View 1 (spheres, each protein chain N blue to C red):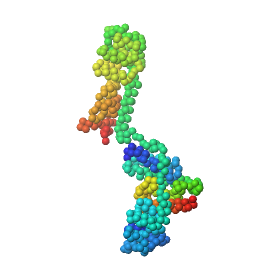
View 2 (view 1 turned 30 degrees about the horizontal axis):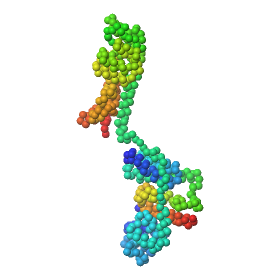
View 3 (view 1 turned 60 degrees about the horizontal axis):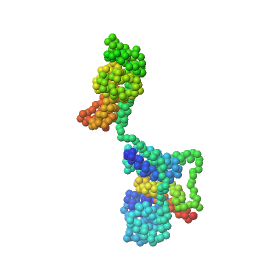
Length: 161
Length: 366
């Protein structure tokens, strides 16, 4: 990949990677850090990465960088004995978008990631597997479970509301 | 891949769809022996009694009459597995005949359309208003990633050599020659006063009334002009020396030296073969003189051939290399560096001889 192609990658994929990470970690600064780290890592291997594979490489790198960050934060949180923040919801003001957001937050980390990669980026099961290190079947199962969980959560909330 | 608690559901689904291979069916049976509690789950999915089969058995359904046999003889769509069908459909993973079965089922059981609607809501849409603002910080700009490092090194070394030698030449005692000897029959009084030859006593004449010596104030240089008067006006007009009487003077003392201009005129006069001989005593450092001439030729001659093709392209890398090479060799008074040109392929190479038993050579191309 040339320098020009690298810069094209920035234009084309920086927003997508940022959205994906931000949706997961809910922290703009940390999401920016992950994006910067990912592009820096890609730059270090710019001669070895084909332009066609750059998107996949970026998401894979960003995903693993984010997971490392989450683990570090979790360790720090455990050390500080701070109660993890559990996102609640304000029933009285909740629209469909907020309900879906809440449903997404209810998902385990890995299910949330595969659903985001599937819905946001339109990745195939195989590509998601490559990014997350899962096999294709595991990706299918996680997506299936995530949909059911979200559907049940949305249904239950809609009944309440 | 082997069946485990993370993926058994998919095995169940594939099994019910008849997509498992024989080896996978055996694996599934073994798994259910280890986890009998999951057998109940599978049976619930079967609902109508899909039996576990061995590799020699066929999939059978107890209530095949409920199936639309014209479409498929696979698992029946039911309340228990409708979500699986719907998700698979929404994932674009459902085969055509199953899509028709699903559509038929929903038509006959409209109550389940709410499941369909609910599952559709689980599909997320990215918020396109969220964007990474500082993309310019992520971008990289490289002047030329393809310039080989060794080329840069040689360029740097050459330029550094040129600069060093120029400093050596022009910031040393070159301009401060104290004594200027020549033999020219001229009256002492013919020599005009200048701000650099302030005292007539600085001029010594011999018995033949020839100027034997002129003391010049330190910091200035006196140069004898060529006898060819046609050169004088050109040279003089480049000076800002109103105190000189050029018509009567064979001296030129000057200040505010412009090095390049000096070099140029020096070389121009050299071309007439007049300065070289006369200045032998003034510029005793022959290598320096040669280096200046060589540099000036490269800078001003306009016939530099920087490219391997010999095209005249102006001052280029190889001219800098040549100057540096000339300067280094002149300074060392021996050929330490040389530039070879292969006449067959017109490639150049720099050779650095550090001793009798060691040399280092690099071509200018890959």
